Length: 330
Image (cartoon, rainbow, N blue to C red; front, side, top):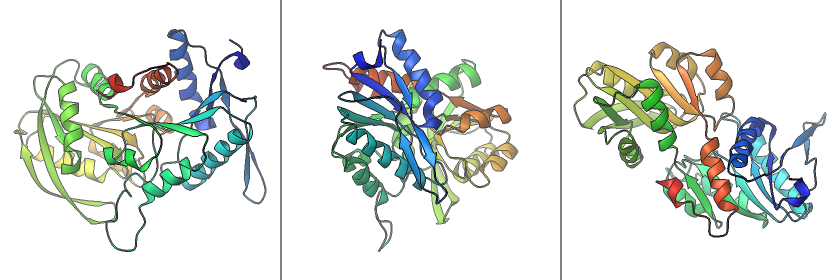
């Protein structure tokens, strides 16, 4: 189908082009032909950039697939705003931002006086463009963050993708001694749902404290016995991997047979790569951070789960009158 004949278009930032191509292929398998255009950026000597969309999008609805750097998201926030502005001025019919990972997720409340709630500020920036009609994202830090957005948010959980990968490629179908481990009390609800996907596995919850920035201290544990289990730690974000590695060490000291560390958004900043390499544990992340696909080629202990099926299903349902996302959130 010619791009001009299709009411829907996928526009992607360069870092998301590979994932966007995968999404387009999955949509084609379902009989939906959506063209894909990649944003082109011109860089100037003074540090400014100018985005350009190399095809008309007039009156079409755009699914804009965009990524954010795991350690310096500010430039990517500006790029997102600029591309959305360019599309508005091109008389786009509407915009759905598709961002598997969003920055500032953990700044969702005032933890102390005189600090911003930056997750809400980001939502305000994203939605100030009135052509932005929706957001598709994966594993927000808290479900309450959906309420920061005055537009429909398709908040997709990744647990089914991770459970399938771990079940088939790491545990090899042996689920008899699996223990799902929540690395802190805040992730307990997410892990209960994840445990259901792993044959209703038993669960343990660790309690942690943060004595300083990017520092964690294990305070205690509740739940099933650790002795002889194949433990799976599941979290939404692995930044410096301190929480994951501390939890894994505690599990091994209590007699766990193996530990797998799984995190939707593998930011892997600071000494995370070195720390995880030394741990000897299997690590599973998603491609919500595009560079992880290349990192997995360099480290045998790291594997990457594709979010393309989730995103393709969400886009497909968004193109239907009466399409439903609820099945994707189970």
